Amino acid sequence: MFRRTFWFTAGAAAGVWATAKVNRKLKQLTPESLAAQAADKAIETGHRLKDFALDVRAGMLQREAELGSALGLDAQADQDPGRELPAPRRRAALGPRTDPGTTTPYSLTYNRNEDH
Image (cartoon, rainbow, N blue to C red; front, side, top):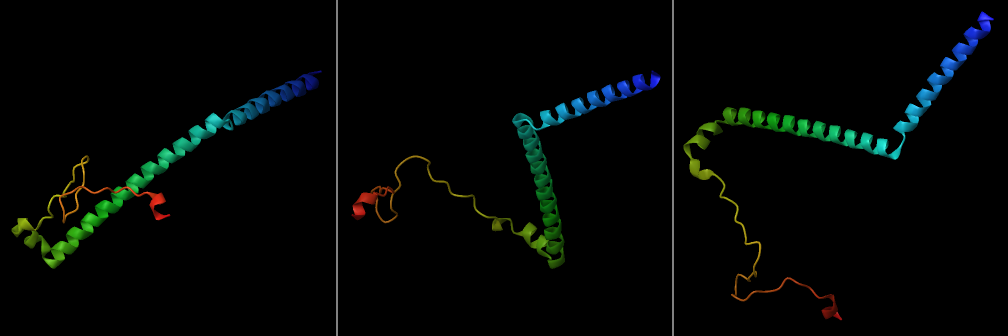
């Protein structure tokens, strides 16, 4: 009788364990869970790429400084502050554009029907 009770209990425990494991796996395979896992992986990959880019940038700046000091370019850059690049020119976001040779505005639209 104890043998039957033991095997019945062991079988019931194995069934409960297997059912719980299958339910957990089914919840992991739902579309919402898969989307969340994909988003987590994408965010993790983005962080790794950002860290990689920062490491490359730091290495680049360090190597540039080493080359500059080896070639003696640091002293020239400090002595001549006028060698900086000019600020970028910005056009007005709105308003007509004019042709440099004339003062009349021109249109950048293209009508496909004009070719026929």
